[in-house]
Length: 192
Image (cartoon, rainbow, N blue to C red):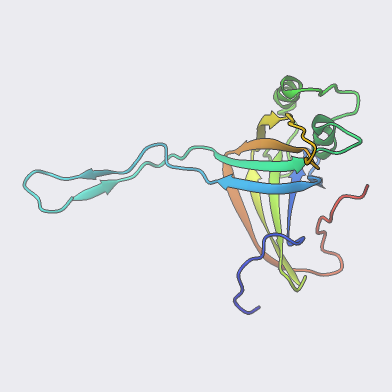
């Protein structure tokens, strides 16, 4: 493929969650995404003896903080954001998740639910090339939803209600580009 800049919208990028059964589910009506990569736990330090013109060494930390993904989704007519999260995270319908405390409780009590490689809930960004012949994936490992802003401000010119989800993760894993065949599963937009 010729060198091309990545186009982010227009169905070239999808966001999915993978649950403990290793099933990917598309996050419906995702409108905006902001990603903050993991950062060093502290800044680098230079070793600079008084009798030297230049530093003799630069010490960097070996540890990094969590990363953060903030997703803005639109509220649906037929379900609350927590019902939509129950669907995408495959939370049993008998489990009550009506607010952030219920979601935290479910995540804490279901840490035994792991994906095939032993990690917990994962968030994925799936990128398709414009020709539809390749895709690549970035997986955000050990994802935890840490905030849901289920708030609204309605005015006469407000047409939709955006809701913000904040997800923290511990590690990134990039999967190289894969040629698409008729058997390649690429998540599509969810059906109604």
